[in-house]
Image: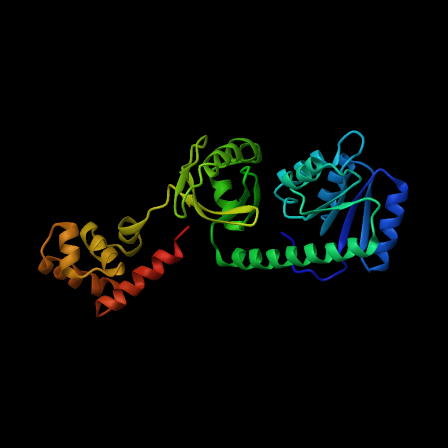
Length: 304
């Protein structure tokens, strides 16, 4: 993602009509925006990858590669997918308008373009994009393994930590665009409940995604590292505890009493207390509350 917005908005206008380009260019420059121009889809993709625009105005009907295919390719590129795309079309058929929105457009304008209406709609979508970017930047800094995808499973955004974990699993771009998208799309079509997880196939390194919810047009997922130790096993490794000590500490951190822990681990409450007496000096604490605090902080820090 780009950093904080500091300069003029950069607008990429894609249209094969010189008259339309001239009209739109003049209106946007008068509004203080920087304008990039492309005459067809392939050229637009090249420009967008070299100079990432803040928003794209895209003609629906063009030679070679039309606006619909251009938009689909933009949304398939994780570095460009979050850029809002407004379709410009002379088409009045509802199916064409729906098609533009389904392939990733956020809005559409019918030609001939009215500059005042164009600028008003652009400002709304630019503002929404900045709010989304700010929220994503905040998530980036928390170290969470989060990502968003479209209903078709296309990766839209991911934190740096998520990208790093994909890299560790050797989940390269072709796998993400094909196998990952297909698996996630099929799973989302089944309407998973919040908290449900999907094990990802096609990788030697075990990864899964947990469903956190759907907002607007994207699903928020959490990437889970199948190779990471969790729960009591992680506490045992990180704190140099015995297996039983780590199990007792894990359940203490989960708010269980000695009696409840005894029932879970099939031991007497007295034995639970004896294990705690060994745990306290190892952690340098004097009571169960302090021990639970250390365990909770450690589990939170290593959570993916």
